[in-house]
Image (tube, rainbow over all chains, first blue to last red; front, side):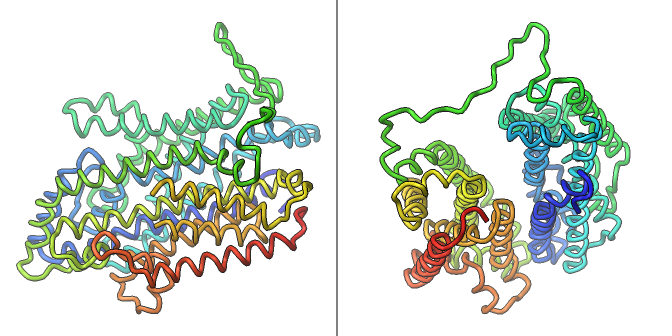
Length: 421
Length: 98
């Protein structure tokens, strides 16, 4: 697999292909499991459709009474989490390798810059196609398990739609990274644009006669297709727009890469460029330099603050949403006249209380430990990358036991988590 | 939910003794997704209790409505401590160049 740049780069993405493909597949299958219980009678189906209409700002409630329609609606804007990986990978592909210096070695070989860039980007797009295919197959298998009416082709078209929107944001990250010295600002800017485009797409569902405004967002063209709803189908015009955007953005990014100096940025006339940041020396006498534990506390203070804000905001939003939804949900869950299986499911997840408020709030708050564990994964990633990239060697050359170094980092993580609670 | 977070961190530190960053992060993400699937979709699929117990969320329970189940939390803490201890042992013995 090391015979060329394309295969080597594709090999580097093997974990991401499996992880994101299977993960997103599970995300789309999960709501299918609950809808089978929610739509067992025509009355429940009608009540669900009414409830879904209350949340039209998040996603079009099309055929919400069907398995595919409910899954598409329920996932809503959360499906765009999958765009996080391509925007990180695309910013890392060229700019990230320039940061590390590994691109210099590659460019010293008898290959044109255009070929190097094309092979790397082709590997990234191939990985995205594989992720989309895995997601589509899993959506189909989930649909078969829960008696949905869409086919394997519909599942694969869903995966293709997902792949194309990922390619668009990857292309945006690739283009922006030509104007930044580091990959971090490019990834951040693309992440910000992702959120902005999601909001722009929402506008036409909330404000009448604003579809022209939402057409400015690539998310709008993603939402034109709903392959998991056979009655709605796939809009090949929307897919074509996404493909065209991908080609334009990627082409522009590669064109700029070929023409600029390696390690430098594309300069726009009259706009000053911030110089590349040099490594920051540790300030003498800083409180965090007393021990591995203190330094670890200092390093994770900033991420902890933002994650705390995110989770606290989510918890507060959940309390408000539950209060607004509980009366509508009560109609839905009791519409069958007998004990609702959906209510039984919610009781399983949220605790066997008697008040719907408590049951539903308990179920929603089951998400909080998932967010906390996601933060833990980011910190483990930091530790593992420190070990891989040799940043532990200096610490370990000092008279400290390895156990103390590891436990110091872990203790700082535990301390931050306690501060969260 | 702190013991759950520390458990996944301890597993990650343990796996980092053998795996590179991308593989370690991928493994943890897969484990988290699997636990989530087992706990939130498993009951709908009528999976046996033995399967549901494989997920850490089983031991988290429903503290908002039923309060903290100390015995289950103790299991999570012990599992996390064991993973951390093994991780420390592995880190102490491994060659950091590999």
